[in-house]
Image 1 (cartoon, rainbow, N blue to C red):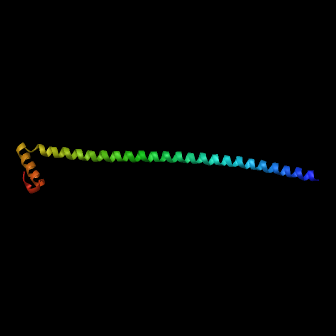
Image 2: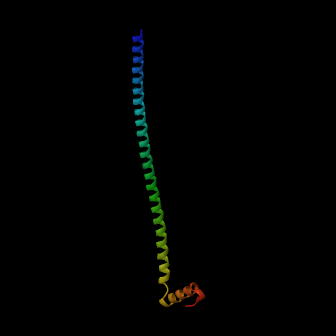
Image 3: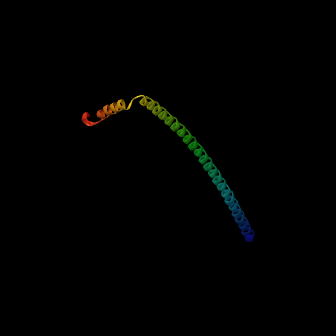
Length: 107
């Protein structure tokens, strides 16, 4: 009878050890899956951020080009106006503007 109980205890302990090992394997597999899923999510988020950054850069470049074009158009227009003046008239305009800027209004 004592040997029967001992054999039963050993069988139960063996079964418990086997169940523990199975649970460890399941846990490891689950952890690996969670890790892969997290890595995939990080990669997807990095791609999304890169695309968003690329789009933002494109929009900023288009905006800068539009502003630069406006500045160039204005400069061309102003140069056309200034070309209509003779040298003496331009000198008088420049001198008048300079005196407005200078402290005391004198050269």
